[in-house]
Image 1 (cartoon, rainbow, N blue to C red):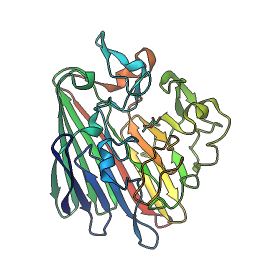
Image 2 (image 1 turned 90 degrees about the vertical axis):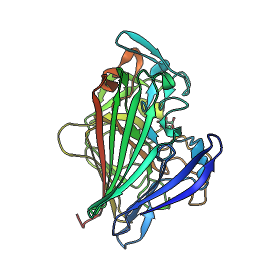
Image 3 (image 1 turned 180 degrees about the horizontal axis):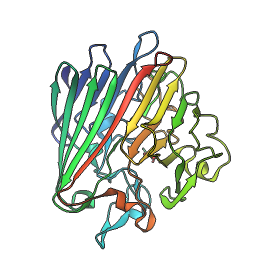
Image 4 (image 1 turned 30 degrees about the horizontal axis):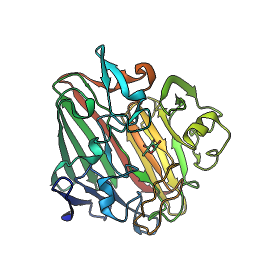
Length: 350
Ligand code: G6D
């Protein structure tokens, strides 16, 4: 395990530090104290070549603004809050509208842009890092002083686990996620259209033209959103479908089925890399980078559409008329506790 100082962010006179967590086989992550940003998830292919399977900016200063939320912790609430307002205990909460008519990803000064305190720990079985942040009452319009503790854990089974814990001194809203963009080909060799994807979900959360939930759930069977039998991400992504038109590809929340521990599986056959996702979150937003920014990646080029897929396990985002707000309510003194595990293996070695 190593700790290195990366660059000084003069904006807040704070030190941006990069941390590396590795197991004995070289599998692991690199992350920043800024936004808990995961810059690298280093995974072997079937020949043992260890490569980065998430998108990473070439210039780490880009993470100060992070226009596409690469690798970032997102909070207090992931996704869009319709019209930048919702109700909590009959009180109308109003938020900054940083996503057009909506609030997005916790607002312009959400958790992605905050410095987390980091403590690293290791034992013979795993190495972990505790990232903590104290969000003051009223920050970005959210009530309550919120203590956030997020734990990144790497073990000897090539598993990366993110544990999210939070507690508030007032009723508030919390819906945390991580916004890493995955591409199992490694070092962005190709786009993700030939990756196979399985999603354990029978219902899509319908979005309106402002990309916020309408409250309706759409049965996925026989639609482009049906991944109950693994298929190539590119097979249906450009079909003529009203929901695909809204997102210009996949940029939607799916309600995860309760049955079955395995919630998602992403496979890149050529490298042999397999990523299985397990989570106790109720939904997952899948986003196929339909609106890439123009910042150079560390593989030496600008990103293209469909270069990677963001897999954002979370509660359903807050739609119009307080749709799904109930899922994000955290009562005073209660503990928000969620967990997502990314388990990496090699195809046919399973
Ligand atoms: C775009 O619509 C997408 C979001 O889903 C994504 O989280 C963001 O880019 C980074 O706004």
